[in-house]
Image 1 (cartoon, one colour):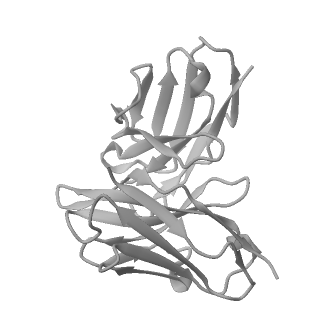
Image 2 (cartoon, one colour; image 1 turned 90 degrees about the vertical axis):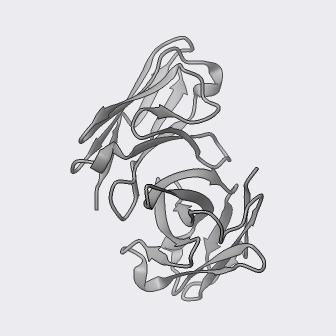
Length: 124
Length: 108
């Protein structure tokens, strides 16, 4: 059974960089045709997809955040990470990591496994 | 990007009643790549429907999805107490992936 768990600081100061890690168990992040995503949910708002890193290490970022986001991985620890720079109060949210997969040779962006989420507040 | 509009924002119903949730896309969703998620308070969303009409593991057949192109529907045939939650639609036919704003199904 695949399990994902987010970790990182719950409080980040404005203009700093938000850094989160997703630890994956029950499967390797570099095997299979899988994609490892970050999604956030701002207070009282819906869900926003941030981007993914694939089983092969390629990344895709939502254009709305592209200049501020970096998703990377550490295959030795079976973890992947999110960095969001120059944060503001608008980046206060619950951040989720979630898995999606490949179908017919292309990214099939359905999220079948999710972490429980981690709440991040941006405040001085 | 494709904008998804869900309606109504809140649906107040009693257990045993039928729930019909709508998701409308600003442009046609490629290959009907439309998913639905259920989210309960304090929990992560849970995949409910994918490919517009395929039910995910663990959900009973009272949940069904339908639609194509720009108009999609999630139907819960007879609401059970555990079905009261927020439901989100999501398109994955084109990047960036986008979600609707959600429909809250609450107990009347």
